[in-house]
Image (cartoon, rainbow, N blue to C red; front, top):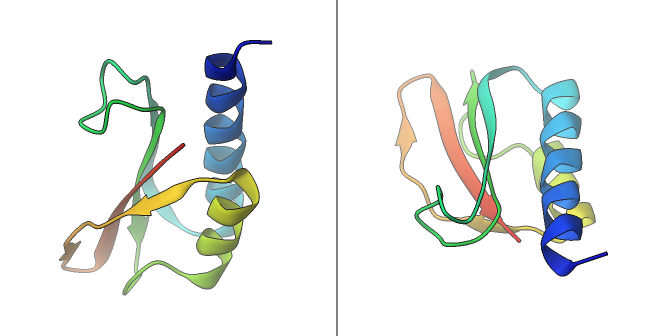
Length: 83
């Protein structure tokens, strides 16, 4: 299995887990060509969150993803994580 396929699977697995754990406005998996980071990226907007909740951080760590700095917005938290 190529590295890219495994990376995509890890990001998708984390995206599903986050949707199950916390309230979200949106959760997207972006290919490296569509991501500003040039890597498989999980892009999410968390509803009613101030910062990134511990359960989301846990899922990112389990998937081996790196949280990217993002500014918070009123009543939601935009986050991105990359492989």
